[in-house]
Image (cartoon, rainbow, N blue to C red; front, side):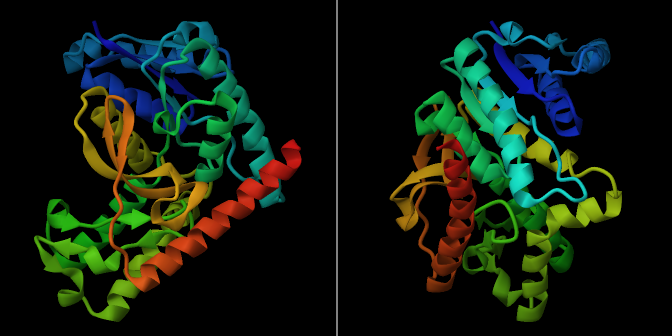
Amino acid sequence: MRKKITVVGAGNVGATVAQRLFERGYADIVLVDIVEGLPQGKALDMLESGPVLGTDSKITGTNSYEDTTNSDVVVITAGIARKPGMSRDDLLFTNMDIVGSVAEQVANFSPNSIIIVVSNPLDAMAQQVLDVTKFPRERVIGMAGILDTARFRTFLSEAVNASVEDVQAYVLGGHGDTMVPLVQSTNVAGIPISKLLKKDVLDSIVQRARDGGAEIVGLLKTGSAFYAPSAAVAQMVDSIILDKKRIVPCAAYLKGEYGIDGLYIGVPVKLGASGIEEIIEMELSPDEQSNLDKSAAAVTELVDVMSKRSS
């Protein structure tokens, strides 16, 4: 019997996540959205690609959470993008309400599911899902670190003219301009990156990785990234559904790890059938730890704003 995966939100990110997972063939997919016809139409289009791709998985579109009952994994991409004239707090509150409402439905219909949060601001929205569902921290995970690391590895690969597969790196911290690429441990086939690139080049790549999402938004003019984010989600789902126990950077709720308590922040974790099976504590340089603390402080600001509104 195939596993069941629900994707909430049939926009660019959600629909592309659904497509990637459907094409894998190991699970049946449910695509949910509040817009009538949108998830149904996209799901039907994907389903009709099955004979060409050779997959017998099922994918259905719906406006009802009843169809998501007993999902093994739920991916939440619902939310809005920041619009002209909208403050950061406006965006935060709007998505807080949307994601909170989704979390209630997920907890009701799939109380044993593992939730992957993609909605922005990522770390704060993961915190909102944890607070609403009351799930254990192992089953509420934020997707950011894999995406940020993929961008970093892409730019490094181009700079040294080597395969992306041989570029090993981690990006920790909050999903935004305070993210923390771990330059000290970055290597290409075991060779430290500092031996291959000059500091100014490396510094510019670090900054480009931090601005990765904004660079794409600037090019697209309307809309934001969805191909790379959906690939990152699919890697997380692979590791969970197939119990691969991949060690990847994700937003996890820390309880003292890295000196951070009661907050979602990007760190390396082991992902398996039960969700986060272990939080990996890497040895950071003093500068990296300081930058991680600053990143955590930025996330704390958002969480505090949400807490004041809720109280």
